[in-house]
Length: 498
Image 1 (spheres, rainbow, N blue to C red):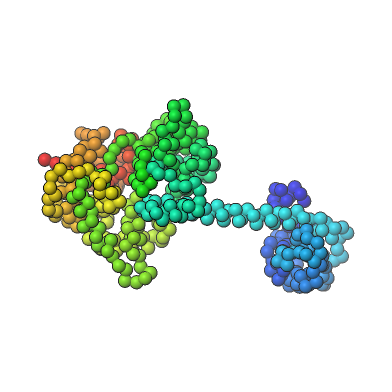
Image 2 (image 1 turned 90 degrees about the vertical axis):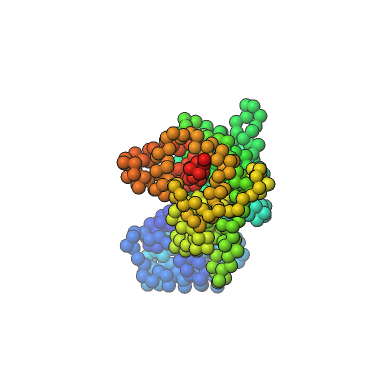
């Protein structure tokens, strides 16, 4: 019975007891409710076993004894309360071991049941503690996920308050690291990550990608003394089948930017023998738009920022902003990120499109909204200064380009800035002179099938081309968060250049 307690737990012990008693064995509550049960064979049914054990459990509780037997017809019910307390001091809510066996009772069965009470009690307690531990782990995991969501949506103060109840404290500045694990190995990799940096990083199981771990680690962890291996490189070296992408150092408030950088670095790392890559130095598009860009973003987002829901249960402006940011980053996977139904997501996106006058099925409008949200999240002083006086905002040009929309007024004026053109040249430099696949794919709203048809190649062939472009551009294209918004803006800025 001790071997069964170690290997099979309560279920195996009860199954073994049912076989020894040639009848039925189970655990019942003080009120007679059957909690666990096992019979000698799948078809072995004792007549009215529920009523029999309920009557015995009630009598056992009322009398406060340490054992009770009840004879009825051709069967005898033997009941023992679980626990090792002295008579009269047991837990009145503790379950009761009940065994129903044919009469006459086999010699030694009562002694056997008395002996099994202790290992069965310990098994039950261990299983209850394991269930509680899993609930605690799940609660902590959801808490960390909530903190990451607050950071990704720019709610820094609330994130720090929630994180205060957990550990470690949120560092600032940070590097964001995305670790792609093999199937089912995420928990083990999380332990390796915690050991690698002494528990200083904020480790979150990605709510969107089941194989990803997200680490928000101190920025100085990537700039250690010579000879000291950074935690992200340690993880890539110690776990043979994982891939690691790391961002540049960013302020804690820019965690969303750091995550996008780390995700792009992850796409590059998949093609490298070391399975590790850091994001290359490249300015964010939100940093080069200048004061005109901030005014354009404020004008575009104003209907959303000032939205007041008609009913209390309808989403407010902050919830709609978070929905837009999550959908732009994760596409249809935003349902997992936001924990909402796909119909709820679709309804919110329709409302956002109506408020802003955007067609969110078009890549042009998606890119405009993505840029506006990032500009709004970027402090104005951090933007590149505007050397010339601001010019009036002009309507969004409907000239040639990957796609246009009149709803995003003034975006062309923003994209004509010299700083934006320099940024665009830097983004497109790796594919200069070979932009056909990229331009065609973006012109087809980022859909591979139509792009393949327009290029005159197969869908697998188009996918291979885009995979090679990921390596050349050092950006993720096929999996969200994708760089397609930045690339659309870069191509548009180049088309607008003199």
